View (tube, one colour):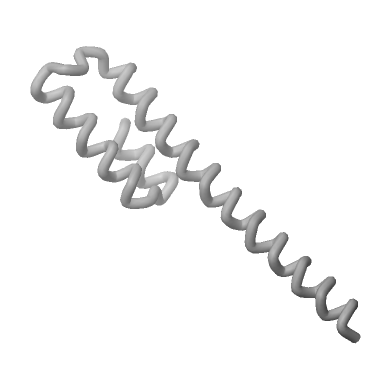
Length: 74
């Protein structure tokens, strides 16, 4: 199930590293609840998507600022 989450969302390396760490923690017994590990991966996926959205918003704001600067300069 967790692997499908990663494949479905085409996650960043950060999420893949978190997934690997969670698997390791499950194997050594530090996280006994599979559901807890699954929740952590879903949280990482959401975090990654929010970061990408914030980055896109910042880029769009910069584009608008450049357009406004060009209008004022002309």
